[in-house]
Image (cartoon, rainbow, N blue to C red; front, side):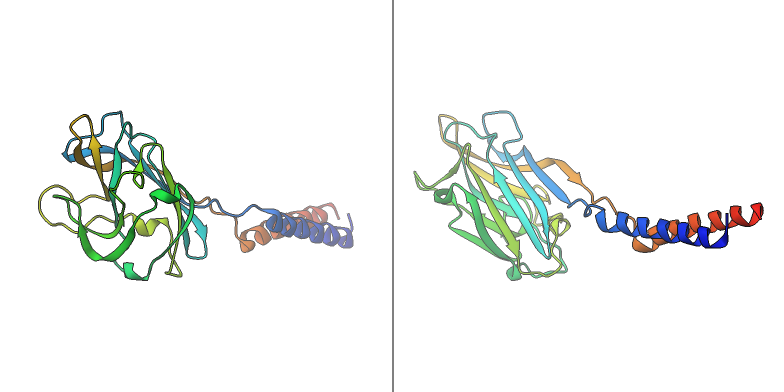
Length: 230
């Protein structure tokens, strides 16, 4: 095999590696799901947990999608408050929430933010409070879901919501909490938290340097074999 032929084959290999790089799928987005399945104060919801799912998804460019589902609640049960935490390096008041879908009537009256400003019963203090209506007809109740886009911090991602509440005595601290009302015939209430989690880490794609290096290795081996045959 002549040197020119080896060179041509090496160039072809490098171009193929470049094509693989350009065709490679984007890294998988990071997802995190809080499953509220444990009562830490008061009366627990009637059905089997998890009663609420809070699903965070990285959209990219500092945008996170949050879908809250009440698939595990039953009867007249509804949520009056939902509490989350934020990365302690960030200011929660910078966050912006855009309603994207679900039962619009059940959307929170307010979404309040502030460092360690909101206490969930005997638990610690939280940075974010979804404050829902308790009036009949406007409640965030069994079977409802809501979706929001969260922005306001350029580097925001789902990992920024995986922080414990600030200790404040009593139960906790926890990663998140919710207040459920109208439980059972007596209309009791209870505070619940997630102890089940589901997380998907991004799959790193090979870098351009790594793919180019692979092409170079193939090229050098082809050249070495050519020289041995000469």
